[in-house]
Image 1 (tube, rainbow, N blue to C red):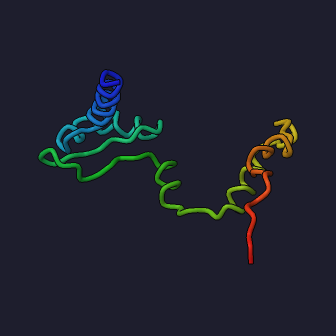
Image 2 (cartoon, rainbow, N blue to C red; image 1 turned 135 degrees about the vertical axis):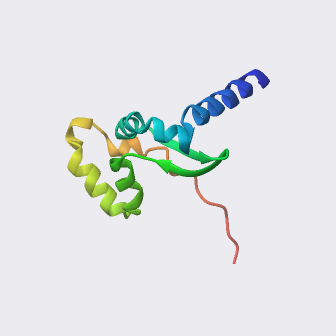
Length: 109
């Protein structure tokens, strides 16, 4: 188990470090960083090793700044973007195990 934890930590460290640049390095590589942001990759910018900003693409920024949608709005968007009939979902089978059908406890009043 310790080996698995080590791999997870190394992965997180690699992902963070691979996407982290000093502001000076970012200036030198700005065109490529913008292309990466357009493709969905985020880049953390540091000053003296301390994270101070994050470069994200326009699409991701819009998603983050749009705020939360209500469940109803999210469902409407999902239903509009997805052909529900093609999913072949059986609601009865899908939710069959979500509620315990056992009788409740005896209550004495």
